[in-house]
Length: 355
Image (cartoon, rainbow, N blue to C red):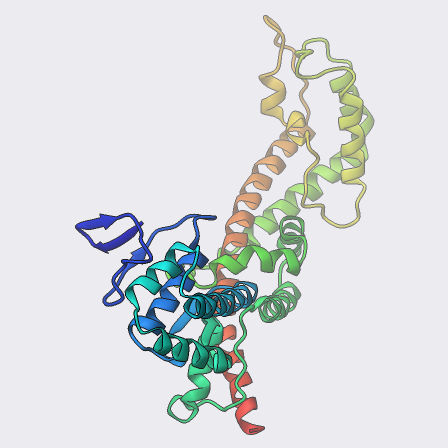
């Protein structure tokens, strides 16, 4: 479908489409875009007497550019044969034969196009930009050997790795552990961040301090750990032997596993910042709210009160870690944006020095 202007939309006809002004062609996959391009190319050569170096064709990929060059070349050969024979089964070529009566002139134009086809301006977008910079090297201030990087994946990966090394060296232990758990490695982080590098509207928020939460968590952990190591057996029996707890919440088959996880958790010499999955089941408020109907005899112990405090501060710490991770990613985006520009300039400067 060819859009001539905002008020005029008509079915596309390569034979009659105007060759002046601006035309927008809407086409989906498999609708003959290449056929249309090669047809318009022929018409510009024959009807406008343009030389091939004055017709610019651009596409997206190297593969598409190669195919397009081959298709234009083949179209020129087909047109030459049609004008030599004076007829063609191709509707477009037959239309050109009908409307272009000077067959000898047409053959000369086509011969010249084929002879100088190496000069045909059929490029990828970045290939055309490279050509323009080469042709205007002095005006642009760049060297003749400037290399355009179409894919910045490798450069971005290097930048993310640099950022990763510097940031992880100065992170707090809980945030480093959390970040590693969520981000895995700099390779997956680079993939995640790549689509956002060009989004200049992203604003870097203030970094959230987690030191206070870390100190409070450590205090709660050590207090609970001390009680558990001294009274683990009696604490366990308060849960296992209690007949008032709701069996759907505190299943007999599950409780031993929970206790084993607690034992492993509090056996660590260093502070563990990742709570066991069911740590909240040992908090005093959960135990009190998990009684069977008409039961009031819930397990009570200072350990359960300490676990309540530990679970609460752990949640606060995790929320701050989540905010910190978001800030970490935004800071990386800003850093990567600056570094991409800087390193590209340095690369250009190095090329200029060697010209």
